[in-house]
Length: 208
Image 1 (tube, rainbow, N blue to C red):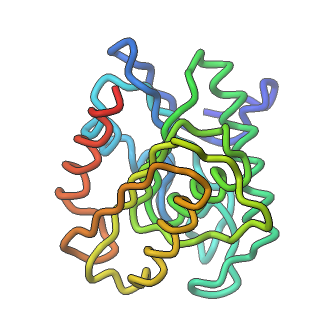
Image 2 (image 1 turned 135 degrees about the vertical axis):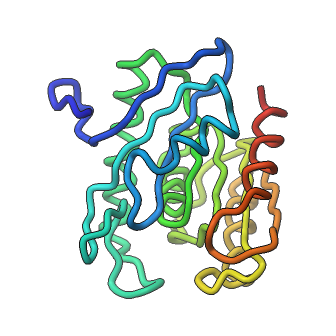
Image 3 (image 1 turned 90 degrees about the horizontal axis):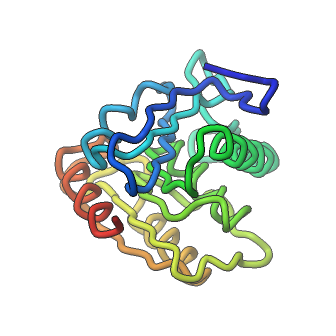
């Protein structure tokens, strides 16, 4: 759905909460996905939570993304920062429209990168994040205040796209900003595994 009259200009899916008190989730898909991709993951890791799942607006070789890149692993930083603020505006307006508390982001790959960029650009936009197969989006000139914001980083041991140095740099950057970072390396590559789902589910359960 999309509703430009209220500023909800991302095509998105919204699934209302069925268990009051559970934190809402912002689901951010990877390259080639859409607003439907992470709905089953959201249901599994946080049953009963409200789910807000926008569709990325950028197309790369026919595949949807949340921001442009210049080459594999080379981000268009101007576009990334602009798109992060655009997503932040959507989250604020959607939260008001649907009566949601500040959400926890669940991002995979490109979705994890836009979630990190959102935290670094607008530190109050998210109540936390699960970053699956994410990298450092950019290093801000001034670190935001993310004091106490819980972040779970899930990395693949054999991920061909995200190096161990890069995932360590992401954890270090968010930690320096004050986030409460938990980093876990799972068996597997860039794709999600049942282990990712189980770890994310436990982590979210500990936060309400």
